[in-house]
Length: 568
Image 1 (cartoon, rainbow, N blue to C red):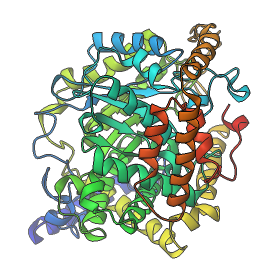
Image 2 (tube, rainbow, N blue to C red):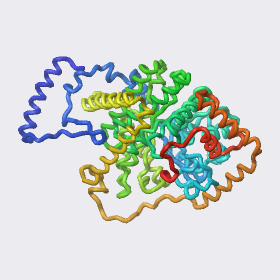
Image 3 (cartoon, one colour):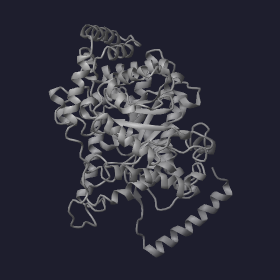
Image 4 (tube, helix red, strand yellow):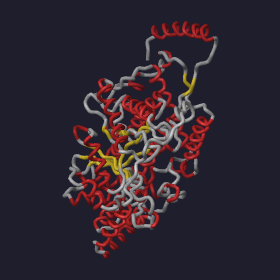
């Protein structure tokens, strides 16, 4: 990495530095660890820490393999990251109101377009319709109630879906995507014209204690979504690997990266086994990445993640397209590190998280609102979260240079170290029989729970300082008014789902659902390409998201730990 003259000079200066430290501080040890992963770190880094690195292989240039420094040779100077706030509450028209207000506040996508991250409520997430007993008390409370294509019409009317990215944040992906496609058909659009993203969490949400599907069935369903989107929706990103969710469940930085990649490997292996070309489906796999408190650790995690993913796509799957090897990312700033106490301090925390994400080279960003520990963001807090992104973009100057932290002795050393740690964990998963077995035998969840418990103990003991929680506390009353949804939401949602069903030809609906059962049985036997078209036909026949979900469960079962009560 460095010539011998530089290395010798550094050794000489390092000796002088060590002598000065010993004399001034009388042998006190200033070494530490990274905040999240506990990687041992020194108080100073020099060229001596990088002399074993190869510049072309280990650092390189932006826009060149292994894309560690950026997917693009010129990045924010040419195109900024997408402002992608997550929003959704109440009825579809309530969510549309928030969408319009954020657009008016300057929310931007690429080149003048927009991207809307729409989160549905818990009943819709799990394929439970508003008129079912399990949905009562939860309709529209933590997301939008949108179980039919008519609801999509109430929310998206007037939007040009060929230029707008619609991100469907929903666990019951097949039914939800089917209704979105049918709504688009009512607007004269084909699936191939649509832009956006599904979560495809049938398998990927394994870290949740109430994952929706048992692993093997969930993996087949996820693969079938990818099969359909790869062939019918070329502008659609089909899969989101939820690193942020893993982080919220206890993953440290190294495990968020590693478990995210391992999840994607399991899905990609399934797609290859189903006969799909990696260069056809790999560009549609994206990662939602949590940016947390340790500023440099999470920047280095991001850089190492990009390099690892490029290596895996190239070496394991033989990808040739640049887009197949580039890490497609959406940053969601940390939520678990925000506090209910002194909530305005969260604006400071989230600003540093967002700055770290921008310095990492993210391609899209959601900044957590300061009042999220209290409830759904208000309009004011949502706009302030957007303003954080806008200030970073327009006022800090960091967008003028690609990967401005490259070359930092500490950043390059820690990036390389995190890559090494991640490779060790990936090998452990392979040695355990692969991702599915490691998940089913509890190996993965045990690690998340262990780290989560350690994190909480360190706060309780005061070893980890959380401003306003265990240090610098002040007597305070609740002054932040939590967001409250319209109490009439549930009544309206129930009336609408009943009206939706009343308009249909029940015989056609029953026939479409029977055909879906047949398609599910074919998928269970390993025949791909039939189930998503059957879901779309069922939606056309006015089967609700809940009915489609329940039909799929005649063949594919709930995850072993699933209970509605855990989530609700």
